[in-house]
Length: 139
Image (tube, rainbow, N blue to C red; front, side):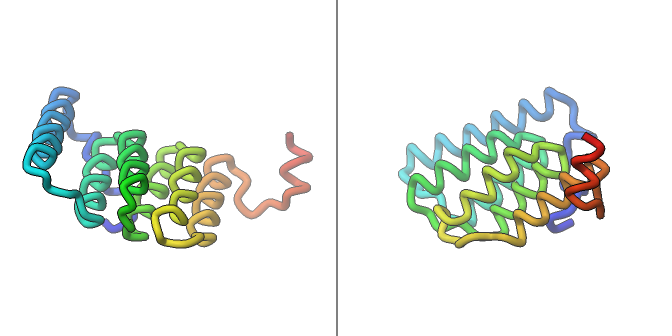
């Protein structure tokens, strides 16, 4: 499901399965390096999607940061994917950090994505639809 919650494979994978997948990823990455194959924005999208499915959000963020440092213009869908998946799992600060990478990644500012993360955070905190004053009064 695109950008939805049903992306995770971790619910049905055993820890040793996750380790096997990580081992295979490492083989692909080292082979690419040995053969001097440059990663494309499409590669990074699929790589981040795989890392999200394994629940490896920090690794996904590091992959995006690597892509940005290598001047690879990422697909906006990759930024949305990782940000929203982080937010769905309660990693709101990381989700916002990833969203802020959009400018450096060549995708421009993404106010819609920031609003989506904030809405997910508000839902998780139980403040959906409340005014700021009502939230402050409860605190």
